Length: 382
Image 1 (cartoon, rainbow, N blue to C red):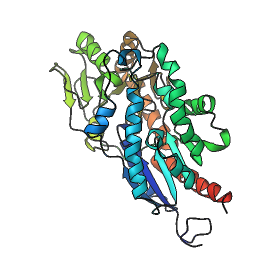
Image 2 (image 1 turned 135 degrees about the horizontal axis):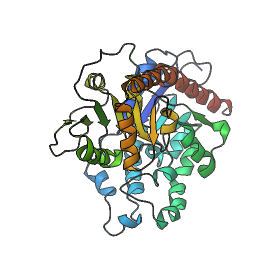
Image 3 (image 1 turned 120 degrees about the horizontal axis):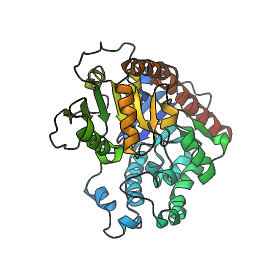
Image 4 (image 1 turned 60 degrees about the vertical axis):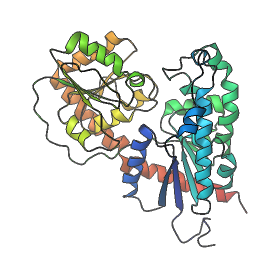
Protein backbone atom coordinates (compact mmCIF):
# COMPACT_ATOMS: atom_id res chain seq x y z
CA UNK A 1 0.00 0.00 0.00
CA UNK A 2 1.60 3.30 -1.08
CA UNK A 3 2.68 5.45 1.84
CA UNK A 4 2.37 2.62 4.31
CA UNK A 5 6.09 2.23 4.91
CA UNK A 6 5.97 -1.32 3.53
CA UNK A 7 8.13 -2.47 0.61
CA UNK A 8 6.52 -1.39 -2.62
CA UNK A 9 5.55 2.04 -1.31
CA UNK A 10 6.12 4.72 -3.93
CA UNK A 11 7.74 7.29 -1.65
CA UNK A 12 11.11 7.13 -0.01
CA UNK A 13 11.16 5.58 3.47
CA UNK A 14 11.00 8.23 6.17
CA UNK A 15 13.75 7.74 8.75
CA UNK A 16 13.68 9.33 12.18
CA UNK A 17 17.10 9.80 13.77
CA UNK A 18 16.81 10.03 17.55
CA UNK A 19 19.98 10.90 19.45
CA UNK A 20 21.15 11.80 22.92
CA UNK A 21 23.33 14.27 21.00
CA UNK A 22 26.02 14.98 23.56
CA UNK A 23 29.77 15.10 22.99
CA UNK A 24 30.82 13.17 19.91
CA UNK A 25 27.18 12.35 19.16
CA UNK A 26 26.74 15.89 17.83
CA UNK A 27 29.74 15.53 15.54
CA UNK A 28 28.48 12.18 14.28
CA UNK A 29 25.06 13.58 13.40
CA UNK A 30 26.62 16.53 11.58
CA UNK A 31 28.44 13.93 9.49
CA UNK A 32 25.22 12.00 8.78
CA UNK A 33 23.45 15.17 7.71
CA UNK A 34 26.35 16.06 5.40
CA UNK A 35 26.43 12.56 3.92
CA UNK A 36 22.68 12.51 3.27
CA UNK A 37 23.13 15.46 0.93
CA UNK A 38 24.67 12.92 -1.47
CA UNK A 39 22.14 10.11 -0.89
CA UNK A 40 18.46 10.64 -1.67
CA UNK A 41 17.19 7.13 -0.95
CA UNK A 42 15.55 8.16 2.33
CA UNK A 43 13.73 11.16 3.78
CA UNK A 44 15.39 12.02 7.09
CA UNK A 45 14.28 13.92 10.17
CA UNK A 46 16.27 14.44 13.35
CA UNK A 47 15.14 14.65 16.96
CA UNK A 48 17.55 15.27 19.84
CA UNK A 49 16.92 14.48 23.48
CA UNK A 50 17.08 17.92 25.14
CA UNK A 51 19.86 18.72 27.62
CA UNK A 52 19.24 17.38 31.10
CA UNK A 53 17.19 19.62 33.33
CA UNK A 54 17.12 19.59 37.11
CA UNK A 55 15.14 16.35 37.37
CA UNK A 56 17.42 14.34 35.09
CA UNK A 57 20.53 15.74 36.75
CA UNK A 58 19.12 14.81 40.14
CA UNK A 59 18.38 11.30 38.90
CA UNK A 60 22.06 10.71 38.13
CA UNK A 61 23.65 12.44 41.13
CA UNK A 62 26.41 10.45 42.78
CA UNK A 63 25.87 9.17 46.32
CA UNK A 64 28.80 9.92 48.66
CA UNK A 65 30.36 6.78 50.02
CA UNK A 66 28.71 4.55 47.43
CA UNK A 67 30.01 6.18 44.24
CA UNK A 68 33.61 5.30 45.07
CA UNK A 69 32.59 1.65 45.32
CA UNK A 70 30.55 1.86 42.11
CA UNK A 71 27.46 0.99 44.12
CA UNK A 72 25.28 4.06 43.60
CA UNK A 73 24.09 3.14 40.06
CA UNK A 74 24.44 6.81 39.07
CA UNK A 75 25.14 6.02 35.43
CA UNK A 76 22.19 3.63 35.08
CA UNK A 77 19.85 6.03 36.84
CA UNK A 78 20.88 8.80 34.48
CA UNK A 79 20.42 6.57 31.45
CA UNK A 80 16.91 5.59 32.54
CA UNK A 81 16.02 9.26 33.00
CA UNK A 82 17.35 10.04 29.51
CA UNK A 83 15.42 7.13 28.08
CA UNK A 84 12.20 8.35 29.68
CA UNK A 85 12.66 11.75 28.02
CA UNK A 86 13.42 10.02 24.70
CA UNK A 87 10.28 7.89 24.97
CA UNK A 88 8.12 11.01 25.17
CA UNK A 89 9.72 12.26 21.94
CA UNK A 90 9.12 8.93 20.20
CA UNK A 91 5.48 8.80 21.26
CA UNK A 92 4.99 12.34 19.96
CA UNK A 93 6.54 11.35 16.61
CA UNK A 94 4.43 8.19 16.19
CA UNK A 95 3.22 7.73 12.62
CA UNK A 96 5.67 10.21 11.11
CA UNK A 97 8.42 7.72 10.17
CA UNK A 98 8.91 4.34 8.54
CA UNK A 99 12.30 3.45 10.06
CA UNK A 100 13.69 4.43 13.45
CA UNK A 101 17.40 4.98 14.12
CA UNK A 102 18.29 5.41 17.81
CA UNK A 103 21.70 6.46 19.06
CA UNK A 104 22.60 5.16 21.59
CA UNK A 105 20.94 2.21 23.31
CA UNK A 106 20.62 4.31 26.48
CA UNK A 107 17.97 6.42 24.77
CA UNK A 108 15.85 3.30 24.20
CA UNK A 109 15.97 1.55 27.58
CA UNK A 110 12.28 2.28 28.21
CA UNK A 111 11.12 2.05 24.57
CA UNK A 112 11.59 -1.59 23.70
CA UNK A 113 7.94 -1.91 22.66
CA UNK A 114 8.42 0.88 20.11
CA UNK A 115 11.56 -0.79 18.71
CA UNK A 116 9.59 -4.01 18.16
CA UNK A 117 6.69 -2.24 16.49
CA UNK A 118 8.63 -0.54 13.67
CA UNK A 119 11.71 -1.24 11.54
CA UNK A 120 14.44 -0.09 13.91
CA UNK A 121 18.21 0.23 14.06
CA UNK A 122 19.87 0.80 17.43
CA UNK A 123 23.40 2.16 17.05
CA UNK A 124 26.16 2.54 19.59
CA UNK A 125 29.83 3.27 20.05
CA UNK A 126 30.12 1.06 23.15
CA UNK A 127 28.11 -1.32 25.29
CA UNK A 128 27.31 -0.68 28.92
CA UNK A 129 29.62 -3.54 29.80
CA UNK A 130 32.55 -1.72 28.17
CA UNK A 131 31.69 1.77 29.40
CA UNK A 132 31.59 0.58 33.03
CA UNK A 133 35.33 -0.02 32.76
CA UNK A 134 36.24 3.19 30.96
CA UNK A 135 34.82 6.17 32.81
CA UNK A 136 37.64 7.63 34.91
CA UNK A 137 35.31 9.16 37.50
CA UNK A 138 33.89 5.70 38.26
CA UNK A 139 36.80 3.31 38.58
CA UNK A 140 35.87 -0.38 38.34
CA UNK A 141 35.56 -2.16 41.67
CA UNK A 142 34.52 -5.63 42.72
CA UNK A 143 30.93 -4.34 42.54
CA UNK A 144 31.22 -3.25 38.92
CA UNK A 145 31.13 -6.82 37.67
CA UNK A 146 28.42 -7.78 40.17
CA UNK A 147 26.15 -5.10 38.72
CA UNK A 148 26.53 -6.53 35.26
CA UNK A 149 23.40 -8.65 35.54
CA UNK A 150 21.31 -5.64 36.58
CA UNK A 151 22.60 -3.52 33.69
CA UNK A 152 21.96 -6.38 31.26
CA UNK A 153 18.32 -6.59 32.38
CA UNK A 154 17.79 -3.14 30.88
CA UNK A 155 20.24 -3.16 27.98
CA UNK A 156 20.01 -6.63 26.47
CA UNK A 157 16.26 -6.37 25.71
CA UNK A 158 17.04 -3.26 23.63
CA UNK A 159 19.39 -5.25 21.41
CA UNK A 160 16.85 -8.06 21.20
CA UNK A 161 14.02 -5.70 20.23
CA UNK A 162 15.88 -3.85 17.45
CA UNK A 163 15.53 -5.09 13.90
CA UNK A 164 19.26 -4.54 13.37
CA UNK A 165 22.11 -3.46 15.65
CA UNK A 166 24.81 -1.14 14.34
CA UNK A 167 28.11 -0.21 15.91
CA UNK A 168 31.02 1.91 14.78
CA UNK A 169 33.89 -0.45 15.58
CA UNK A 170 34.94 -4.06 15.78
CA UNK A 171 35.91 -3.36 19.39
CA UNK A 172 32.28 -2.65 20.32
CA UNK A 173 30.97 -5.42 18.06
CA UNK A 174 32.97 -7.96 20.05
CA UNK A 175 31.16 -7.01 23.26
CA UNK A 176 27.77 -7.09 21.54
CA UNK A 177 28.43 -10.64 20.39
CA UNK A 178 30.13 -12.00 23.50
CA UNK A 179 28.40 -10.11 26.33
CA UNK A 180 24.90 -9.59 24.92
CA UNK A 181 24.44 -12.43 22.46
CA UNK A 182 23.75 -10.28 19.39
CA UNK A 183 24.02 -12.69 16.49
CA UNK A 184 26.15 -11.82 13.43
CA UNK A 185 23.12 -11.83 11.11
CA UNK A 186 21.69 -8.83 13.02
CA UNK A 187 24.96 -6.97 13.68
CA UNK A 188 26.47 -4.39 11.32
CA UNK A 189 29.71 -2.40 11.71
CA UNK A 190 29.83 1.04 10.08
CA UNK A 191 32.46 3.55 11.32
CA UNK A 192 30.21 6.60 11.04
CA UNK A 193 32.54 9.39 9.99
CA UNK A 194 32.66 13.12 9.36
CA UNK A 195 32.57 15.39 6.35
CA UNK A 196 36.11 15.58 4.97
CA UNK A 197 36.76 18.94 3.29
CA UNK A 198 37.79 18.74 -0.35
CA UNK A 199 40.44 21.38 0.23
CA UNK A 200 42.38 22.40 3.33
CA UNK A 201 43.29 25.91 4.47
CA UNK A 202 46.86 26.91 3.74
CA UNK A 203 49.26 25.99 6.50
CA UNK A 204 49.89 28.91 8.86
CA UNK A 205 53.56 29.54 9.72
CA UNK A 206 54.28 29.47 13.44
CA UNK A 207 57.41 29.92 15.49
CA UNK A 208 57.09 26.96 17.86
CA UNK A 209 55.95 23.37 17.28
CA UNK A 210 52.26 23.37 18.16
CA UNK A 211 50.20 20.74 19.96
CA UNK A 212 46.38 20.82 19.94
CA UNK A 213 44.04 19.04 22.34
CA UNK A 214 40.27 18.74 21.84
CA UNK A 215 38.02 17.63 24.70
CA UNK A 216 35.15 19.11 26.67
CA UNK A 217 36.39 17.42 29.85
CA UNK A 218 40.11 17.65 30.63
CA UNK A 219 40.01 14.80 33.13
CA UNK A 220 38.13 12.32 30.95
CA UNK A 221 40.08 13.16 27.80
CA UNK A 222 43.54 13.09 29.37
CA UNK A 223 44.00 16.84 29.14
CA UNK A 224 45.23 17.19 32.70
CA UNK A 225 48.05 14.73 32.02
CA UNK A 226 48.98 16.68 28.90
CA UNK A 227 48.93 19.98 30.81
CA UNK A 228 51.26 18.59 33.47
CA UNK A 229 53.69 17.39 30.81
CA UNK A 230 53.62 20.76 29.10
CA UNK A 231 54.26 22.70 32.30
CA UNK A 232 57.07 20.39 33.35
CA UNK A 233 58.88 19.94 30.03
CA UNK A 234 57.70 22.06 27.10
CA UNK A 235 56.58 25.53 28.14
CA UNK A 236 59.75 27.07 26.67
CA UNK A 237 59.79 24.88 23.52
CA UNK A 238 56.27 24.20 22.27
CA UNK A 239 52.84 25.83 22.15
CA UNK A 240 49.69 24.10 23.42
CA UNK A 241 46.15 24.89 22.26
CA UNK A 242 43.30 23.48 24.36
CA UNK A 243 39.80 23.28 22.87
CA UNK A 244 37.78 22.70 26.03
CA UNK A 245 34.86 24.05 28.01
CA UNK A 246 36.77 23.84 31.29
CA UNK A 247 38.64 26.67 32.95
CA UNK A 248 42.42 26.45 32.81
CA UNK A 249 44.82 28.42 34.99
CA UNK A 250 46.90 30.87 32.92
CA UNK A 251 50.07 29.15 31.75
CA UNK A 252 52.79 30.54 29.47
CA UNK A 253 52.53 28.91 26.05
CA UNK A 254 48.96 27.62 26.60
CA UNK A 255 46.04 29.03 24.59
CA UNK A 256 42.50 28.04 25.60
CA UNK A 257 39.62 28.02 23.11
CA UNK A 258 36.56 27.80 25.31
CA UNK A 259 33.78 28.73 22.90
CA UNK A 260 34.17 26.14 20.12
CA UNK A 261 31.06 24.11 19.30
CA UNK A 262 30.73 20.87 17.27
CA UNK A 263 31.29 21.67 13.60
CA UNK A 264 32.94 25.01 14.42
CA UNK A 265 34.79 26.25 11.29
CA UNK A 266 37.47 27.78 13.50
CA UNK A 267 38.75 24.28 14.27
CA UNK A 268 39.99 23.98 10.68
CA UNK A 269 41.93 27.22 11.08
CA UNK A 270 43.43 25.93 14.32
CA UNK A 271 44.50 22.67 12.70
CA UNK A 272 46.16 24.70 9.92
CA UNK A 273 48.74 25.81 12.48
CA UNK A 274 48.86 22.53 14.41
CA UNK A 275 51.73 20.03 14.17
CA UNK A 276 49.97 17.20 16.01
CA UNK A 277 46.84 16.35 17.94
CA UNK A 278 47.44 14.95 21.42
CA UNK A 279 44.50 12.73 22.34
CA UNK A 280 45.38 10.83 25.55
CA UNK A 281 41.75 10.06 26.34
CA UNK A 282 40.80 7.67 29.09
CA UNK A 283 37.16 7.30 28.16
CA UNK A 284 36.51 7.85 24.44
CA UNK A 285 35.05 4.82 22.76
CA UNK A 286 35.53 6.04 19.20
CA UNK A 287 37.29 9.40 19.01
CA UNK A 288 35.92 12.08 16.70
CA UNK A 289 38.69 14.51 17.60
CA UNK A 290 41.13 12.07 16.02
CA UNK A 291 38.99 11.92 12.87
CA UNK A 292 38.84 15.71 12.64
CA UNK A 293 42.61 15.99 12.97
CA UNK A 294 43.28 13.30 10.36
CA UNK A 295 40.85 14.99 7.96
CA UNK A 296 43.01 18.11 8.33
CA UNK A 297 46.22 16.12 7.64
CA UNK A 298 47.35 16.40 11.26
CA UNK A 299 49.04 13.36 12.83
CA UNK A 300 47.58 11.99 16.07
CA UNK A 301 49.21 10.78 19.27
CA UNK A 302 46.56 8.84 21.19
CA UNK A 303 46.16 6.20 23.83
CA UNK A 304 45.74 2.70 22.50
CA UNK A 305 42.29 2.15 23.95
CA UNK A 306 38.80 1.19 22.79
CA UNK A 307 38.33 1.74 19.04
CA UNK A 308 41.21 4.18 18.58
CA UNK A 309 43.52 1.49 17.10
CA UNK A 310 40.90 1.10 14.35
CA UNK A 311 41.15 4.82 13.59
CA UNK A 312 44.82 5.71 14.12
CA UNK A 313 47.33 3.46 12.37
CA UNK A 314 50.26 3.22 14.77
CA UNK A 315 53.37 4.34 12.93
CA UNK A 316 51.30 5.22 9.86
CA UNK A 317 48.89 8.06 10.67
CA UNK A 318 50.19 8.74 14.17
CA UNK A 319 51.42 7.00 17.29
CA UNK A 320 49.50 4.93 19.85
CA UNK A 321 50.75 4.84 23.43
CA UNK A 322 49.95 3.18 26.72
CA UNK A 323 48.66 4.91 29.86
CA UNK A 324 52.09 6.10 31.03
CA UNK A 325 52.56 9.91 30.85
CA UNK A 326 56.23 9.37 30.03
CA UNK A 327 55.27 7.27 27.00
CA UNK A 328 52.87 9.98 25.87
CA UNK A 329 55.54 12.63 26.25
CA UNK A 330 58.14 10.62 24.35
CA UNK A 331 55.74 10.04 21.44
CA UNK A 332 54.86 13.74 21.21
CA UNK A 333 58.51 14.75 21.26
CA UNK A 334 59.41 12.13 18.65
CA UNK A 335 57.00 13.66 16.14
CA UNK A 336 57.56 17.31 16.95
CA UNK A 337 61.31 16.86 16.58
CA UNK A 338 60.86 15.12 13.21
CA UNK A 339 58.62 17.42 11.14
CA UNK A 340 59.03 15.44 7.91
CA UNK A 341 57.80 12.26 9.58
CA UNK A 342 54.90 14.14 11.18
CA UNK A 343 53.85 15.63 7.83
CA UNK A 344 53.98 12.22 6.15
CA UNK A 345 51.76 10.75 8.88
CA UNK A 346 49.33 13.64 8.53
CA UNK A 347 49.05 13.11 4.79
CA UNK A 348 48.53 9.38 5.32
CA UNK A 349 45.81 10.15 7.84
CA UNK A 350 43.93 12.33 5.38
CA UNK A 351 44.08 9.61 2.74
CA UNK A 352 42.70 7.13 5.29
CA UNK A 353 39.88 9.53 6.13
CA UNK A 354 38.87 9.90 2.49
CA UNK A 355 38.87 6.14 1.97
CA UNK A 356 37.25 4.94 5.19
CA UNK A 357 35.76 7.69 7.36
CA UNK A 358 34.39 10.31 4.96
CA UNK A 359 30.71 10.87 5.74
CA UNK A 360 29.82 10.43 2.07
CA UNK A 361 31.19 6.88 2.31
CA UNK A 362 29.93 5.94 5.77
CA UNK A 363 26.46 7.48 5.36
CA UNK A 364 25.91 5.45 2.20
CA UNK A 365 26.63 2.33 4.23
CA UNK A 366 24.34 3.56 7.02
CA UNK A 367 21.47 4.08 4.56
CA UNK A 368 22.08 0.54 3.27
CA UNK A 369 21.55 -0.73 6.84
CA UNK A 370 18.40 1.36 7.34
CA UNK A 371 16.86 0.07 4.11
CA UNK A 372 17.86 -3.47 5.05
CA UNK A 373 16.10 -3.08 8.40
CA UNK A 374 13.00 -1.82 6.58
CA UNK A 375 12.92 -4.81 4.25
CA UNK A 376 13.80 -7.29 6.99
CA UNK A 377 11.04 -6.06 9.29
CA UNK A 378 8.29 -6.32 6.67
CA UNK A 379 9.54 -9.64 5.33
CA UNK A 380 8.21 -11.34 8.47
CA UNK A 381 5.06 -9.22 8.88
CA UNK A 382 1.67 -9.92 7.27
